[in-house]
Length: 136
Image (tube, rainbow, N blue to C red; front, side):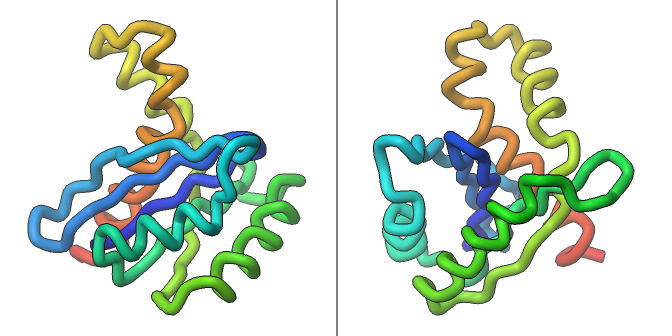
């Protein structure tokens, strides 16, 4: 199993994919104000037999690192020191926009979209990672 992590300022989206089906699916959203994200990710890794974690890398449309990169670097250091599986990073540009559009097109209510947005964005990021890195 591979875990996709889309870290945001308030919420962190999680998605998982198994190597057999090659498809990512949304898992959950961690609210940083309620739950310690590193502790929850450690639990998710154990619960799902995760062998690799892919963390979204927040870059701007131009490809340059934005202000969110500093927070992500701190998050990555903490995550890597708390787990024993490989951690990779992958471009997460436009994943939230893609997730929002897809859910809107599917007729998902605005309330449900808000609940699921970050997990679906993690799914989009993880699927992109798998498509570009693992299967070509």
